[in-house]
Image (cartoon, rainbow, N blue to C red; front, top):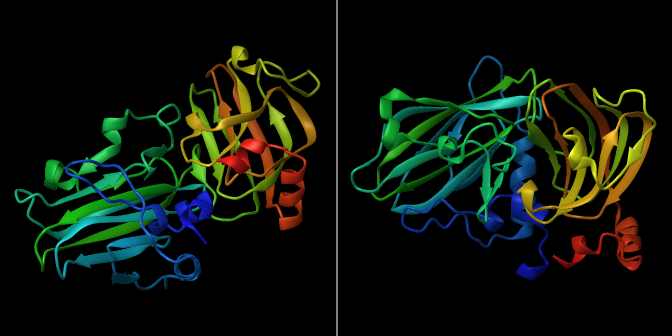
Length: 323
């Protein structure tokens, strides 16, 4: 399969297809080449691994890696490693803490270890700057800048990443990764191509996005906005003016501000509303003014090859297939 034909899902979920080549002091991510089979095998084995309760799981950290379990991960450089990154992922209702342990790197010589609150891919960020509660500069925590002042970093959602540069062989560090229940989850990336989720924003002015890195059918079963509880369901293009609404988005990137809107919902209802989104990334995004308690419940399932082919033949959501 040519690089141009690889889906965004493969690029994102299996991390090293489009992982970082850090240039200078840049914190952006470029393309890397890894076989599709290697990526599927690597990610699936990481998700299925279970950590014994009586012992903390430990393993070496690879230069290019994905971690979906709790444990201690140690990186030891056998040679200069100038473009390394690790993606961390938890369940949608969890956040991730990353603790620096036993760090032996040369900060003055240009080494660094940086935790990012979210994911960065090809210059795009999840959550987007519009949806994340912190300004962008506060989402980067560099060990060399903070040292012993901040040895633990906690994410705001179920994904985080660490990227690092090591110049000298023998330099090393250990990260302890833990997961914590998030009582009010907001932004999240789904690990699976099917499932169900309820998003609640309790009178807070914020935006929340649930990203599904698969072409899926989304069934919205319940939608409640505080200011329209007694109206019949409607889908309309001018929902942004109401200040409280839900968007269904689709596209081929992770930044929700750059995805294309498929439909907006701004009238409460109970009952199924179905939408097939043939994009590599489908997103349910709720915008809240903070004046009401807003809630949306939905389920999603992977579209099969026949359904995708039908969407293509009918020119439905053509932007999904041409990006």
